[in-house]
Length: 247
Image (cartoon, rainbow, N blue to C red; front, side, top):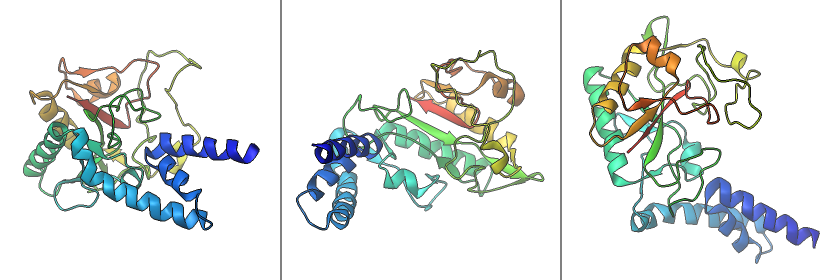
């Protein structure tokens, strides 16, 4: 009974983390070489998702750099978190191309997007990202005034927060993590303001974009405003480590 409970728990966790991982583990239960079978099944299901996702209205974002945009880490691709609807793919691609035109050599990095299948399926720990119409864009960084192409302060692009004023009170029922223990681990790079400001303006002027989330202290710092640029609220995750954009 305990073993069955463990497998059900693992199937649930793998499904929540990757959408197809639970099915891969279920298939592996029928074979002696369980972990090897799981690996093959997971890889096969993930590769198949690229071709099946369009039937669900989703397409995969590029995992490797063949142009001005790619996923920040292959981890997002390995976990199947790099899917969006075609319109969002076009928004991100057009934005990256425009930034690269204005600032040659700029590489735009995408963080979490959505899973390949089914609307309303949660992409934890996000409160949204469940319909392929949302994606997170990593900040651009510089060191000693020089732009760092394809670099983020943290290995996953998240949790390297910019310091600034907030009106949010401490609240235990919140995803607004400060991750204070992690902050000293990140390199002392600075937010590259020109590219960050430019990408927000491009997105704000795109009729396909509905809204963006970023911390108010950054809109003040970057001197940019738009009715599309909003504060995500005090119970959602901090947005001074990335830009959230949605149709």
